[in-house]
Image (cartoon, rainbow, N blue to C red):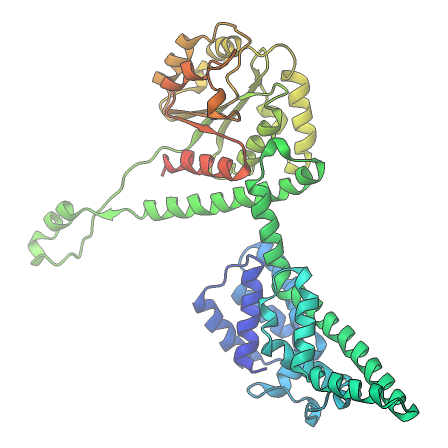
Length: 447
């Protein structure tokens, strides 16, 4: 493997594991390898980490993949080639399958690596593909000719032929095991990240009310990951906005005495409100699972949403923010305390809105986006549309996230169609992906 191919494949492995590496960083990595070389593995690891990994999460992923990718044999092979196909310690890869099977470890490893490149093993994405790629590698190493010879020996029906056939079958078993082992190692490098991404995409599109316990256990790190992605996105957008735009009129006026040469540049900036969110969450049995993900999502984003006020209700509206002012490690306990405190009683949206006006009205101003998460079913009680309309006039926006299908809005005790005209946005919420889009849209109105 050439030095260029080595670093290109390593970058490909990093990208498949969700580590963002730009073309410029790839070039810098290649230059780093030219300077550092492959001999000192520890030095190479630190040097490339400084070039390719930015965040703490990326550094952890980088360390894992480096140890897998630059294994002892690969490191030795690469350092001995650095431009030509690896030929360790002067060995030439045997052309005959039987000679290869009987060769030393270095020759076998070289042949496996070469065969893997020929069959595109770096494209492996799922663990179920390891057997397929192993068979393709065996073909690339000449197993078909050996199998033809094996059949001829078996047809001889002689002791010598049978003995030779047994040797051939043993060689095939050995090389099959080695090819499968090598394919599994390459999957860990190139495919594990893609498989994880596939699972995450599947979970993000799965209906929340259809998730079992194992799904919920996997959802927490996924929610944190998506939230951090939005934090990065909106932090970057804010920095870009803060740079401002050139104020052409003021700049020309200030430089009128300099023949129009803009020595003194003036900038104009549009002042944007800092995000301020008030959450009103229905934690009755039919909606509680959705509340869990909304709260976890937003509390992972406190860096960009410092003004976050959280209220929950079934009958009476409670301030549950103090329960959540803990580390994310204690989120499950905090969520249980919220349900114990606010999740009792018959659902009453009108009473919750009355409590909002009496106890928390001062939290709502022109900067505030009110996010309501609930199905709008109030057990035929007074929905207090008057208070809801007043809140809409007092705040920046009202966003309603409803877990029910639109076809059910307004049926039975649902007041959704009566609340809807006073909302800026009403959207169905059934998956984590929809939640991500909804929060992204909320923050866009502050950018």
